Image (cartoon, rainbow, N blue to C red; front, side):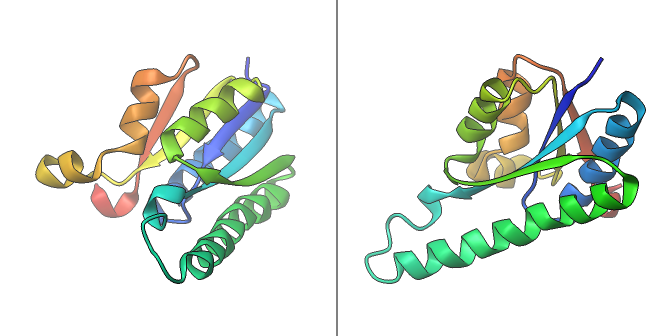
Length: 144
């Protein structure tokens, strides 16, 4: 049923639950996990000085985040492909899904509501509304 499972990660606790679910599903279906971290270029593009330093720091965080997925998947015997990209999170996640023929997206949710969600937006919500493939959302345990 599933051959390629995309796990967009930001290294947060919310992502950890999604990683566990994705690995469980991948084991069940003998699927490959694709771990993706998107360095949101909008976060630092308006900086006049030091934007390269910020971009490198965020890229380093991305490398750590996808390495968490690799470590967990290796322990479970699941194959992983990783990617750290610059762009806009929701657009790059949707593009990656299509370009790599992923058939499931497993994402954590931070559980923001009200004004926080309105102001910050929700990458997960945008993916749920726009994805052509099923999206499994996983709330972090600290929100329950």
